[in-house]
Structures are given as structure tokens and as C-alpha cells.
Image (cartoon, rainbow, N blue to C red; front, side, top):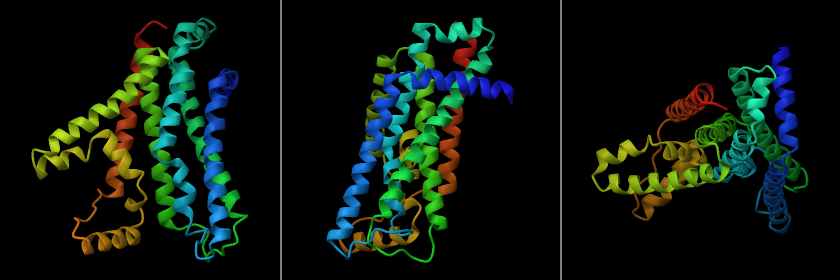
Length: 274
């Protein structure tokens, strides 16, 4: 436990001294505050617009969708990659930390950022609801809401793990972020080409990293009644129904990808010179 507290103190001191951390968190908080204020204003202006728990959980948690994942990934890259050029990690090892413990500190940093972003969204979102005139239901949170929250949290871990992998492999913030954004474009292009091959090939693309992440972060995958309503409307318009893999499958896939990313970053830090 003592070494964990030491690692936590080291990573905290490094993080709070970085301007990128405060800028990213400030911008993220400002975006979510804007969303919360807009929801409250709409609820006050239009009585038919209900903004209360538990019905408004999807709205509250919308701040944790894909843009939040990019925030986490980019922030991890900005915080970790420069350490290799600044030699701060090397100095930590010289001062007595092993590479394994140094890496454990980076994982703690990732976990802390995920927890911070989730807490920020929850505090701002729920705080906004306190000012809403709408009346809530008998429950504060439902099982589907827990499922959606867990899925979005795992998505942040997924993006953060990818950021940590790129930071440790490339060791330069600019190129690492470039590769991150380029990958999303490349996967989208590959998916488009594969889908032309037929339905069987298309189903394979459902397990691609970005597709799995997007589906797990889609509220329709967690709220069956909403999905049924959307598909009923699509049927009336002659459109094919929306389909998702089971949430359990999506969770397993996202955890598997995150584990692979973390393993690659661990091997990179352990085998390469700091």
C-alpha cells in the first residue's frame, strides 16, 4: 500500500503541474455545463420537456460519449509522451522506481482521469437537474441507466488505453495524436470497403475496435424500449431496423481491446530504454 501512495503522489504532482491537464478538464467541464444549462432552460421554457431523474439519465450521461473518450486519449498522450523526451521517467527509475512500478503509475493516472471525467459529468449533470422544475419518478436510477453508465466508463478506459499505448510506442505527443486520429479515418475507410463485399463480411466489422466502442456508447444498446420505439418508426418509413450486439459481448470486446493496448504499452516501457 505504501508504494501505491508513493506512485499516486508522484503522478498527481506531475499532472497538476501540467497546463494541458487544466485546459482539458476546464474545456470538458465547460462543455458539460453548457449542456446542463441548456437542458434546464428548455425544461423551464417548455413544460412538456421533462428533465428529471431517472428519465433524463441518457441526457446527463451524454457528456461521456465519444468526445469524452477523445479528451481522455489526447490528455493521456499529452501527459505521458513528453516524459520520454524530458527524461522524467528515466529519473524516476534512477531514483529507485522499477519500470514495472513506473508503468503502474501510468495505469493509476489513466484510472484517475477516467474517474475524474465520470465524476465531472455526474456532478454537473445531476447539479443541473436540481434546478429543473420537472418532477422525477419513484426511482433515481434504473438497471438500464447503470448499464449505460458502465458502458460509457469502459469506453473512456478503451480510449485512454489506446492513448497510453500510442504515448509509450511513439513517445512524442504530436505524432501520437496524429496516429490516433488517422486510425479512426483508416478504420472507417476499411469498414466501407468491407461492407461492399456482402452481409457476412459486414458482420465482421461489428467487432472492429471503433465500431465496438461506438455501439457500447450508444444509448439504444442499453435501453431496449427506446430501441423498439426507434425501430417501429423506421419500419413505418421502410427502413431496416437498427441492431446491436449483446451488451455483454460489447463489454467483453472493449475490455479485450483495452487489455491488449495496456499490454503493448507495458511491454514497450519494459523493453525499451527510457
